[in-house]
Image (tube, rainbow, N blue to C red; front, side, top):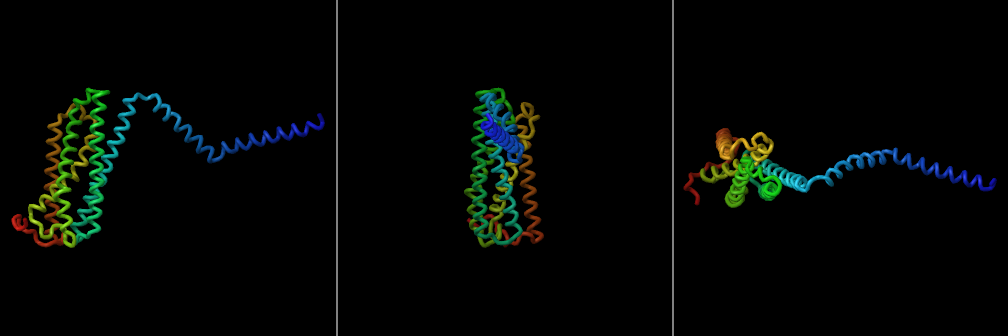
Length: 255
């Protein structure tokens, strides 16, 4: 026993030191962070595990829908700022057109994601909550996304070729009034229409109350005001010399 006593005492001391070390590790900043993350994630994981499949699917669709709006709205806003720069900075450069093409691609990607999430929403409603298919706001938003799609087609096939031809010139130099009006209208429709689905989504008190035709009439009025304001702004810039450019040609001057 006298020989074994010191060994057992040393073992106890070693175990005590190990326990103290573990306690110190737990109480260290890294241990505190790990414990905090674990405590925070535990209820989230539990909620996901007990959630109904329909609820999980709706959350995933909502994330996808918001991603589409973020991509499309953000890129469309950047594109508007670039066009304003064209208006006030003189000649258009090739690298600026490259930026416009890139940003336009992001807008198209956002539009595609918006269509995908919209279709998934309809499928989800049909499977889990058919009553929401009667929500007029849903169909108004779909109609507005349809306007964005048609407008995007014309931007790609008419406005972009015009912009490419303007490299080395100011934005409207040598263009007919009809071509300038077309560029302004398509640009304004894009800039305005991306904000409308966001605004409608933030107004749940419209659900099942305001009919789709009334929402679309309001949307058309907003578009008309925005187009008129854009034409007025461009006209003011030209009169004040803020948009250096050659004289616009009559509509029949160019083929």
